[in-house]
Length: 499
Image (cartoon, rainbow, N blue to C red; front, side, top):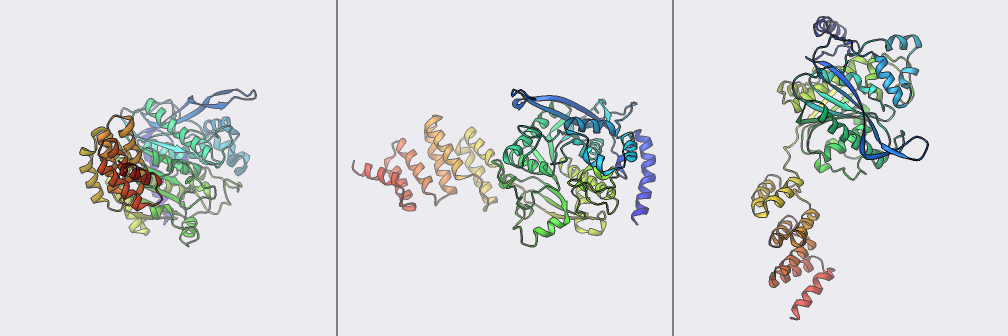
């Protein structure tokens, strides 16, 4: 059945490729989109960070090699050959091991001469497109590892930006919070630079993360509110990773992970997580935003990379396991699901969402080797940042009705943390000249946290600062009732009782 299906698709692509006027040899049965994929390499630097210079102990601005694939107009020139991507990867850290060790010399020589679909320096198509930022993985540091996915998405109207994975102080990347932050900042730099260089729609930004890039992408999705959809590829984020990442990163906040998420990973990892050995998964805990969990029938981490399309025949430790079957159909399914996911959530394409949901509800319609689970997420409330900004700009009197409506709609969700509101109240009280409003902020905090001794303590301090002694003492008494060890409250009460 699969052979017949692929034959039909192949015949279609022979015709389609001729009309599209660019080759899709590395794409298998993937259908090209309406655009030619353009490609640029931008060699630049992040002036806000330093990197050791070679040999002499000095530093330079952090070098960034930004890869951009984008929708382009048709070109009469030749697309890149694979050797160009390989040369770029070699400049970043040596000849790609999966190609050197996974292919015969004869096959490798032939492969390098083959054309990809990307036209170098092609003229961008005249429109604005969604932007996708891709995070690379350990051992797969070069963007070569994902060129097929990037070209494919560009042909369907996406700008894709990425850069090689490089450590903080040297090329080696360590599994720690410092180097994860470095990758996150590299991805943020790519995001900003792509917006400068290409016509992108600022309201439609997505993240793709493979392996360690999935950890970076998840954390980035939590701290950048403009990110609207996140795709992770075989990343160690479903259950706690042995390194402690990404949860040990300061920006990791699951309450802020409220966007649609598709997680594709090896089916065995999902099965293991459900045996109770690893605790609840991130997919289980995720409350807001739709979630797709994609079981991929493979034990090969490299199956989620473009190496699946290069015909690797020999096992390469750390990269590619024994070849048991043709990996291309499974990778084609991965790319197609990625396109449907981003079309659904960045383009509001209802037909793409219908395909995803149909695959989840009717497993027989999904590609062989793929199982899709879907969980509809709740619509998220406004973020804490939005509420705090509203209070600062409009004051509690205008913000309170909006906050109260959100509290009624989300009774079990903490809209604002106690510490943030308390800190905001002190800014009003002492530093921003808004003393009367400070009382309102502290009262709002108590309405959220009525059992907080510290919230009543702060309110008492604000009342006393306004000369409202009776109310201040009453608040301190309540604080002391909730926490008999509050020496400050006891001392203030004693002081004013003597007057």
